[in-house]
Length: 260
Length: 187
Image 1 (tube, each protein chain N blue to C red):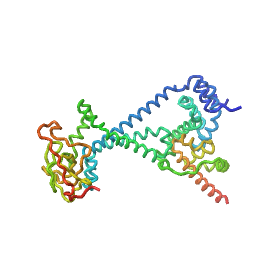
Image 2: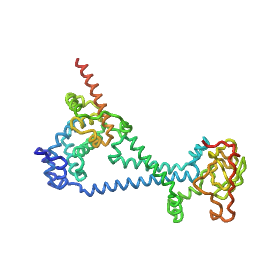
Image 3: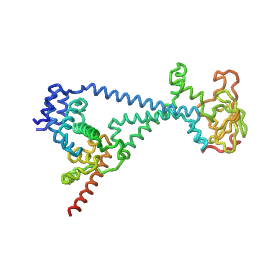
Image 4: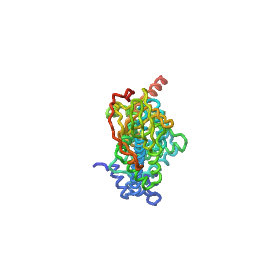
C-alpha cells in the first residue's frame, strides 16, 4: 500500500472524509429536471403569448405590407416579452446542456432543435384558445401581472393598426366600425395592399394598417381577420345597433394590389 | 480468472466497502498522475491534486451510475480539478466559447489498426505533445495514454463526439508539423 492510498483510506476510516448520501444526488437531479421543465414552460408560455398578442393585434401581418408594415411591426412589437422569452430560451439551453443528449451534439444542432421545438409548441398553444381562456380567467380574478398583460392586448392596440368590422363598402373606401366602437372612414388607393383573392364583404372582421387622422385612415394594407367573426356592438355588451346583413361584394371591383 | 471490473469495485464502495476504494486508488493513481502531468505541464503539486481527485471521487461516489463506465467518470472529476487549478493559477487554457463545438464536422472514425500504429508514434513524440495547445493535448492524452474512446472523451470534456474527432485530427496534424520541424532542425 503506497502513501497516497494509505493516507486516503486512513482519512476515510477516521471519518475525515465521508460520502455524500445518494438521496442528495437524486434530489439534485430531480430539482434540475424540475427547473428545466419550469423554465421550458415559461419560455413556451411567453413565446406563445407573443404570437397570440401579434395575431390578436394584427401586427403579425404587418410585415406583409412592405416597408411601412415592417417598420410598424418593429416599432410596435412587445419587445420586453420577446426579450424575456429569449432569456428563458437561453436559460433553458443552459439547463438542457447538462444532459448528455444535448452536449454530445454540436451546439448548432442542439440549439436549433431546442428553438424549433419551443417555437412549434408555442405555435400550437396559441392556436388552441388557451390564451383567450387564460386572459378571461386573469381578468375575472384580477391575477396580478397576468391581468394587465392580457388587458394590454385588447385595450392598447398598436398605433396604425385598427381592428374592426367593414361597413358601407365602395371602390375607394369603406367605413370601419372599430372594436372600440369608433367609426372610421378607410381610404383605399392603388398602393393599398389587399389580401390575395380579396373579397371584402360588409360585416367582415379586418385589420386596417395605416395612419389615423381624425376619423380617416389612409390604409396601406387591409387584412381579413380569419380567426374571428365580427364582434358587433351588442356582442360587446355595448347595447344598441342591429346585426347588419353581410352582402357579398364582387371582388373584381377591386383594382388594388393584393398581397403576394 | 476474470478481473473484477472498475464498475463492480465502485458498486462495492457505494455499499460501504472502504477497502475496495483502495483498489480503485491502486488502479488509477499512476494514470491520474500521468494525466495531471501532461495536462498541467508541471510536476508541482501533482501528488496533492491527485489526492484531491480521489477524495472528491469518494465523496461523490454515490452519484456514479454503475450502468456506465467508471473511467470517464473519474477522469471528469480529474479534468474539473485540473481546470480549477489552472484557473487558480490564472493560466486556464480553456475559453467559455469554443467554435469547434458549434458546427457538425465529418471526422475519420477511430480504428484499432491506426490506433496501434499511432500509439507508437505518440510514444516517440511524447515530448512534442507537451508543446500542443491544451485542448488538443488533453484529447491526445486521454485517447492514446489513457485509452479512452472518442465517446468517453466526449463525456469527460462534455463536448460533442465530432468535436473530439476534430481536436484529434488537428492535434495529429500539429504533431506532424512539429515532428517535421524537429527533423529539419536536427538535419
